[in-house]
Amino acid sequence: MKSIKLFAASAAFAFAGATMPAFADATLHVFLWDNGPDMEMSENHKIGDGADRLTDSMGITTNATVVPAGNITFDVLNASQDQEHEMVISPLAGPDAPLPYDADAMEVDEEAAGSKGEVEGLAPGERGKLTVALEPGTYALYCNITGHYAAGMWQIITVK
Image (cartoon, rainbow, N blue to C red):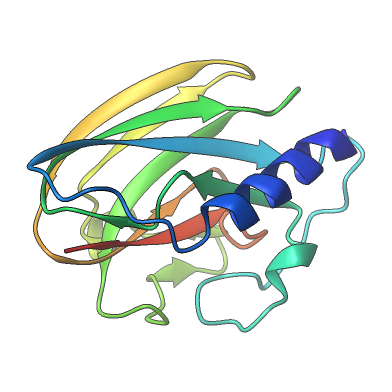
């Protein structure tokens, strides 16, 4: 179970700050991960909370954090061994701008967040794809299954 976190952490460092070449259509590889069935779920690891990302119990890792504007295909892999995950994309006002979070439901209000689409209901080991036309700006990729976003399951990307 810890191997998933080690893989994700390694991938996060390898891909941190990576930029994709500028062309109109691009594919972004997205890895959804968690620390396994015995993990203690983190809390207050939402965007802007200032939490140490290395202590996240779940996360999203991408092969690039900067992509060109245009049609972006999100190739999503649920790397979990036992949990369902999803990936939602929403615009942000900036890199530390919070998403509209409903603490009672423990979920982001996707409608208020302006969701651009999602790959939902990925079983462990399953892949899904989503193609979205994105304008320049800052976007959040996040899992909106109850409690997952607050556990650190998000990644910010910049579209240029």
